[in-house]
Length: 124
Figure (cartoon, rainbow, N blue to C red):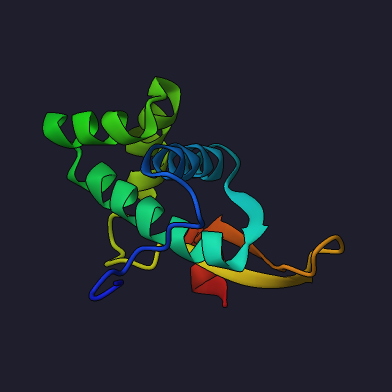
């Protein structure tokens, strides 16, 4: 039974799911935005916002937890040095999901997830 479970599995084993989310988080932090299915974007939002919150803490245990999840030192350094300081005045809501239509092959709902930029957030 599936009582009180809040995570989506996407019909994958636990290890594959964790690696997929880590890779998508790395790509999001490197590029600023990625295109994926809507369900994966909603699950990725949870992981990315947790990592940015760790980046805002900025201490060594937070770096170790981020490194254990993402496993790429260059991305963790970028998170702690570039992305997290921009979000220090925000209390959550570091990402934005925009629907972009359906995928032609299987008609899956596609979305673009991007990091909220301070300049864009104040203009709009």
